[in-house]
Amino acid sequence: MHIQEAAKILHTTPKAIRYYEKQDLISPQKEADNAYRIFTEADLMRLSTILALREIDMSINDIRQLLADETMDMTQYLNIQRSALFERWLALKDMIQTIDQMIDRTEAEDYTVADIHELAVHLKDIKNKRVNWQDRWNFNEQGKDYDNHIKLHGHRFNVHQDYHQALQMVADTVQLEPGQTCLDIGIGTGNLGSLFLEKDIRVIGVDQAENMLEVCKQKHPEIDVRKGHFLALPVLDQQVDAIVSSYALHHLTDSDKLLALAEMDRTLKIDGQICIADLMFANENRRSHVINHFRDTGNHEAIDAIEDEYYANRQDLVQWLIEHGYQVQTYALNDILSIIYAVKRADLSSSLFC
Image (cartoon, rainbow, N blue to C red; front, side, top):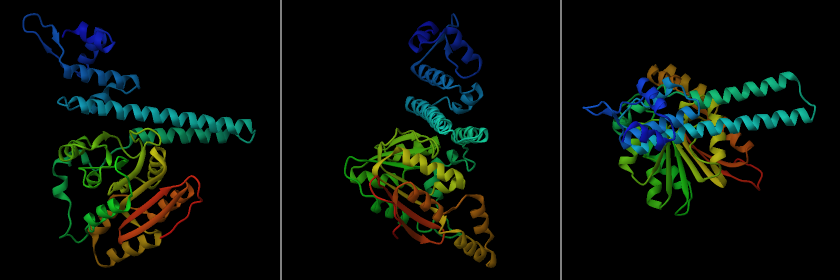
C-alpha cells in the first residue's frame, strides 16, 4: 500500500511517516518507476510500534536503539509496545500514590515542606529505576548459547552448583492447580518455567533479553513470553497465582531487590506464592565468613565473581516479606545458594518458619 493508505490505517499523517523515515526508523521500499513508497504489513507493525512509543514520550534515539533489529516479527513488536506501556502505567500509578500520600499529610497538617520534597524525590527515584535499569552483563547476546554455558563443574568457584536441584526444588515447592498461572521472572531460556508445563500450569515468562525470549519460545512454545524486568512487570495487578525466579535477582542492587519484591506483590493474588532460588548469603555475618574463607585460600575467582554482582542477604528479603504479610520458609542448598518460599496472606499475621 502507499503512504496515504498507511497513514489512514495507523491514524497518523503522511508527514509524520516521512519524518520517521528521515530519522531512519523505517525504510519502506519504493516503486522503480515513480519512487512511491510501498508499505508492507511488517512496515505497518513497525510504524505502529514507533507511534505507540512516541505516545509515551520516548525519544527518537531511544526508539532507534530499541528497534535496531529491523527483522523483528509482529509478536516482538507487540511485546515491545506492551513493555513500554506497562512502564508508563506503573509510573502513573507511582505518581498517584505519591500524590495520595501528600494529600494525607497536608490534610493531617502533619508535614513540612521538606516532607513533601522527600516524597517527590522518592517518586523521581522510583521512576528512574524502572525506566533506566540496564543489563550490564549483556544477557541479550547470550540467548543462543546460554544453556551450553551453564557451568556445573570444573571451576574453583561454581555459581551453578546445585543448579538443577534448585530448579526442581522450586517446581516441587510451589503448589498449583491445573489451569492456574505461574509468572517466571528472568525466565531466560525457560529452564525453570518449563517444569510447570507438565503440570498443566499456564506460564508467563518475563525477561528483558529478547534473544532469551526467542530461544525460550522456540524450546517451549506453550510459554507466554513477555519483554520486561523485575522493576516493571508486564502483568496487571493480582493476576498470577505464583511467582518464581532463579539465578536472576542477584543482578539487582539491594534497594532494587526490595522494589522488585513490591512489584511481585502487586501482581500476585491473595494466597499466592513466591519462590526464589538465587545466589545469596544467609546474613551479613555469613557473607563475611564465606568471603574470608575464599580470601584465605587464595580463591580470587570466587571473590571477583561475588563482587561483580549483588548477592543478597537472605535475611533482608525475608524481613521485607514478613513485614508485608507473607509466611516464609527458607532453604540453604549451599553457602551461596538459597531458596525463599513465601505465601501471601491477607487474614493471618506474618510469621517465619524454617
